Image: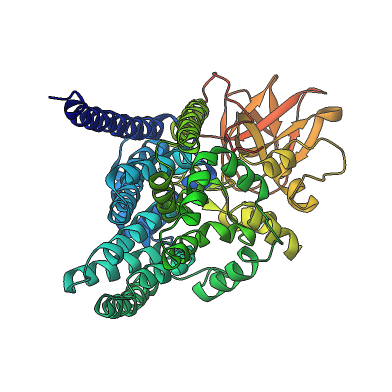
Length: 558
């Protein structure tokens, strides 16, 4: 028998064996990425709006929720309040839930890609998504984005791969309704659903049932939102119609062309391998209809041209369906140089992003939260940027860049009335505007974003304790042996002084706790003596210094 009769089957077996090994390695890399993301749920620095997201849950439980739009999720996360520990422990549990939603996006992506190409190419599409820019760091963060992406991708998997029978259509309607309730940015997926219908165009039954599911989704969303909003009294500017109008005018086109170019640039750098295969997939699509479909899959990402809030966490929401084009590119270029380089870039990106994300710890945040809860075992009112002590009632506006811009545009000082009305004994200077208001660099009272009147009000109302923690009170020096003080709010204050003093003629010494009002107090004592009146907390302050800056890692920039 001629040797060639045996070499062909042997070569085929070897190729199949190598393919199986390669597919196993790809899946192992994906598993490693998920393991790293799970570890980060405990260790990664908590971003501002993760705390803000959690504060809505507690506000709902305490009956203080004041905005109906994009807060329906609170009904599903009330159990977080029962998690022992601080807010970070609750966010850790929530992040694991978000990781499950991220996994749902990956599963749906694989199902769609495998139905159009093959399982090996679908595996590469999932790897491309997991290692794309910001996915490892933010794909499982406690925000609306992972939830909405998981829900929308699940709906698309049904539309793209099933006959949309009754139960499947109901699933699509429910998934889309909840996605829209979680965040109105789900509307950015509208072109993707159009693409799905274009792909299924030859099966008019599927198209019509899909359209019926869309109508049902709007109805479900409307009914659920009505019952959700019925129990909420929105504050001024927080009504659903006002929020929608403001979001449309500011988020879409209100900040010019490519408002988040630095983020997009960094995403392109970290996603170079995926982008190369996605472009190849669109170019080498088997037919023009599929080419149009794949191009439409890219439109959520292309919204960065005008979308103001395309921060890093937006990209894992916007790009999953674009990765279907990666599967086509991997299928068309399999084994070639571009294919190999793209895979190497994906793996390198995943390793670099994992190392970068793991290095951003939350130890300082944990220590700060533990100290606050030690000082205030019972919830207290407070001022801060974003609701970091989510289980307490935060006073004041959300100090995002958008919030600061709105506050500056109004031109009205707010903190004097706020402190007089709500009497928050605690302030966390966890944003530059607050920190610079309390510790101004110059003598003019200007402090980045806060108005001079508000900066002065805060300096007259709070004294520094530790780290970002400030408590109600005042520091004075007894010039000529006397000083007048007017405290920001009535309550129990602890006296800190280097020598015996008298307050309104009443003797006081270091460590005394006095109940004082807001009337003007006359303090007398030795000339030059420094006196501090500071809010008396249930717990004694720790002597371990906490950091005043760097509490938030922020977003990566080029």
